Amino acid sequence: MALGIKKLKVYRDSSIVICQTQGKWKMKDEKLKPYQEKLEGIFKNFEEITFEYLPRVHNRFVDALATLASMVECSSDTQIRTFMVEKRFEPAYEESVNVLIADGKIWFTPIIDFIRERRYPECFTMGEKKRLRKYATQFMLQRDLLYKKSYEAYNCSV
Image (tube, rainbow, N blue to C red; front, side, top):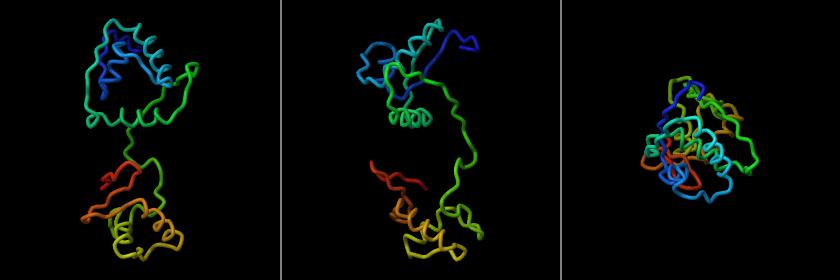
């Protein structure tokens, strides 16, 4: 709106959300109503808005935002603040185990070695060994591929 755009094309990964946003289907989830009301106010600032379905596999930012939104409880009087999502090219946090190993091995090598052979890197301190044992419980090895465990399913992480 600040750029003076009058025609907007919206890409979504959910046909349900598109239909609800367009008013074709009724929104049943109470915690989504503040978002719908905010959208209706925003729509008034555009001459034309079109919606296009985009499969989730091609829209990872929306998937991440949807996951975050599902974790938040809000009522109809909740004010929704906008926020900026930035793509980072470095980790946003430090790993609890050494990420880079001095001999050039990749970050998950200690996890694989620990799961396979209960072996620690020689350079690890006692504290790092303890963190590695705990961290390794979040992974599983299957056919020499490392997978991160999840409560819903096993997600390939490497």
